[in-house]
Image (cartoon, rainbow, N blue to C red):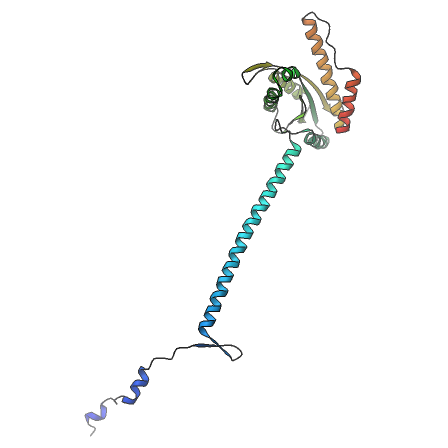
Length: 272
């Protein structure tokens, strides 16, 4: 019959204890694919340096990209400003003669396709030279700025009001079924321009002579429309001066000599 000792667990041999409790030896090398080894601490140091190098390169790329985007933005802004200055009057902010001629050519082409009318107004300020001579160019420049804003306030958003040069302005009205709207706008512009002005405490009054040309009735080319509008403006100016002279009992005022006006028309054609 088996005894109790036969079921007792077998004791672990004392000689095995030190082996079971012995700590694992630290790994000091890392095997490479070719079978060679490299010191683990050195490998970690190299990897850490590579990581820091990558981070530095990424930061340099980020800074370089940011500087590049800033430079491109500056160039775009400068190009936009240069384009604006090339096509707008520095004093009034209105489109200049170059912009007008481009818009006029486009407007004529569009009116031809749509079978509509286009009106061109030439506006000359009467009495502006007196303001310049009496109060100086600074006051005259401020007066031109106010006149420009009044003209813009009379036209529609898709019309073009430009400073043609000196005390002359040109307005282009597009998408017209006939000339009635243009006549009404011309009367409104005249009323607004001939209102009173207060520049630096100085009360000023001026008047305006306006001539008009209608596409395609008065011409189908931009230089023809400019000539017709300019000639119409001078006829109206001469008639106004004659009426004013008669009103005060004086001889009719002398209009601009015809040779001078013809030279001016040729200049307008050359610029167009």
